[in-house]
Image (cartoon, rainbow, N blue to C red):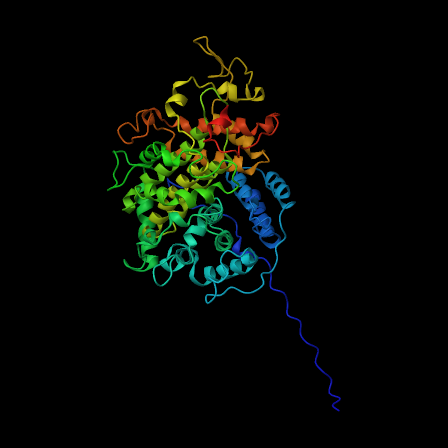
Length: 527
């Protein structure tokens, strides 16, 4: 009998849950005319606090709150507050507000590799493994090539036979656009951990827009005009050249074909098959999925009317997305003689659209086109699923707009007689409203506990920055949409002001309001 002592077995150290320090550096913006800007107030202290809290969230929390797939919005709140110039104390308070209800991070049952990455798509238990897999891909190939390969390539979406396969773009645009939103924070702030998390979120999300992304949607090849990197360089140079002086073309439509996005709204409003109750039941808990099943093919045919055929069209197409999302959400929540209602689901069409301009600076042109077309497709799908609410431009712009009815008394100042432009003017009129409504809106939103409000207001402020000087008559002759000639750049701050009132000026003492989740296209809900 052997008396040789047995060596104790070596324990294997558990794999870290988080990605590590290098994936969450201090944020950095590389902006041009089309991408969002940081507001004054950002400091080295707030920058350091943001990076620290991002790392903490990555180490401690899962991306889904529960088995139903509710999303961890914590980092979105942090980025929005930081970008609007909040203090480090607000960032800390926002983290604590959301950290209390997060699901703890946990190890996945197995590892994800290049050989098996398609085998566990849609399985939320594999989120952590997917996150580490994409982290390794980013380290090996860079963020842009990783995004192109795993979201926009044909291999990421189709089988070898050209049929629907992994459907990664579908997954990327599903979950009420949260994977795209999450990834958009990487594109804007250059924090690679947000890309790894966003791609992992997409991989563990079940695509619910299959009808919108048939094989024909991917009739492009990012390899046919040279390397991915050369196409990225060319596309980025074009975007920056076109946007250097003006975020839009000064001449009428410059694109080569296809309908204006507002034309498509008009045509869909006339389609009886898309009316409220036709594509889904009002009491259904899966209205978007029901709409995709019953009318997804028809919505896709409408969306196909909107084309992006040249990189020279991209700035104009970005503008169309901004107006489309704002109209669907903003005027979709308006009925004559009724208070504004903020649809929770349609609001995400606004808060996602702000990231398109940042994302396209990292993409080859074929992928830029795919992302823009996907965004418009999903906007139209969600709009129909909410009952296809009307877009009453004429009713809205023909009534007298009274901001004082939407502003709390705490903001209605009593100035010294030396103040100019407020109080009694030389003409005898009196105003005690904020001279710049955006300053009041953003200041209040920063202290609001509902993170979606701040994200919405930041998005609308960005659109106002780009398109706020638009005069009435700009759309005359450009679109079929009724009343479009009345639209002007005040739309963005008007919708923001309505939203602020609906959710409550809590900083100024009003009680917190709430979003509407009923579906605003059903007439009986307005009675």
